Image (cartoon, rainbow, N blue to C red; front, side, top):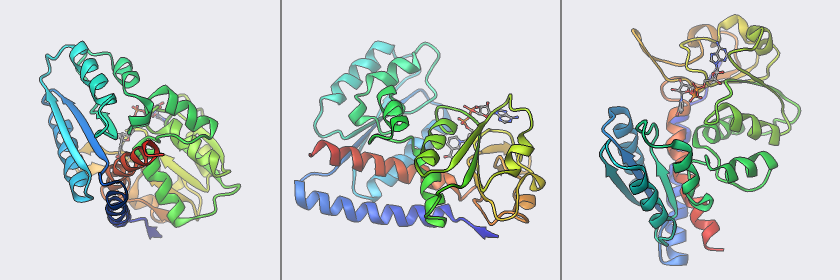
Length: 281
Ligand code: NAD
């Protein structure tokens, strides 16, 4: 079994992006800028935002974090987004989720101009992705896609099973695999026989949020298995795939941690740079 090292792949991607930022700076005399809006004091969100800022600085992006207390009014956030939409020094805007209950998530997502939507959540980007047009692509599935392609460049005709149908992971992942000419099955909590579906797959992407759901005897020999899950358990952080069992069957597998996670942030930086490049045309 080959371990797909997301940490290494993310470091390589960041190095490429750093080089790209240097070249863009020489050409345009400015660098892409990422602005993150952080609302409230949820510790995981604070950690994610700190990591995003650190990585953005590392590759040479201009980065800014705007913080609001939990009690901030929705209209204050929407006005700030409007201001950032017309700020030429801002290439990408990200509002860290989850939001406090009194703020309408969809309203916030739709307020971000699609050309600055580095999360790829705006309906315009969702539609463009499913139509096969250029778009921002949600960072985690983009990271999964890059890991799969690095390992197996030609996915023509492969059978892929995506476990989970969230807007964040499962659905965009399905679109990316379709674009690569995979035959894709998308499965979810109401799927009748998940094991049987998985046993058909050359590629499995698990994005569920149930610790070690995908077992060793669900995976055929030579499958590529990508584990998106991050689950806190008594034995520490585990994925949605039973690592020990599946590693005995799969051709390649991502670990948790150190698999998809590091690629997610690197892809956010990539999306910011791509938004900048599109804005310079
Ligand atoms: P979600 O809760 O939005 O969606 C989960 C999906 O799993 C749903 O579509 C549901 O139908 C499906 N599901 C639930 N029970 C199932 C079952 N028994 N069998 C098959 N499908 C089932 O979750 P999400 O936001 O997509 O996140 C999924 C996991 O990925 C979580 O563990 C989350 O922490 C992790 N995650 C990781 C990263 C990363 O960077 N690695 C990023 C985002 C999310």
